[in-house]
Length: 112
Image (cartoon, rainbow, N blue to C red; front, side, top):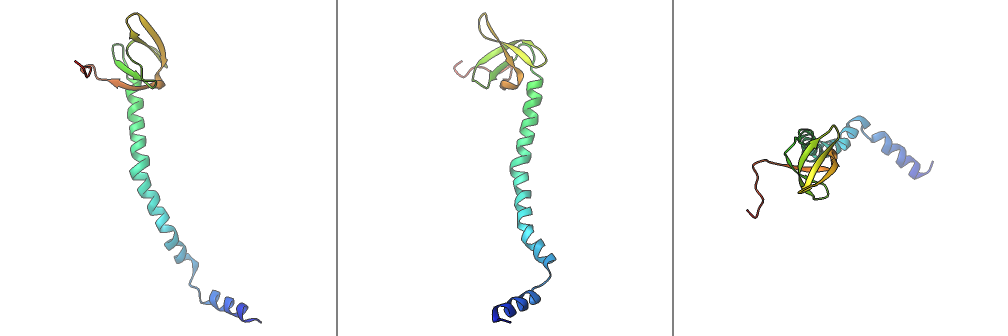
């Protein structure tokens, strides 16, 4: 037998059991995933649920801002779309999922 083969056999015989080493190696990865979940994934899911609830509760008379940046007043609400008046006499139909913000009824424009 060659010296390198003997060294390999002795090294593998002297190595401790793989079960404990596996846990030590996987523990930092699990810790990173747990931290990532609590700092990134969970808050994003909470924001998404809150946004969906806000969009589902849109009513006639609410001020809204679309994803394209158009601001208007809701004049009609259907199941999956709303009619928004963007200027006097100009109404557009918009899919509810494209609404980005629903403004408070008490909010005033910044320049007033």
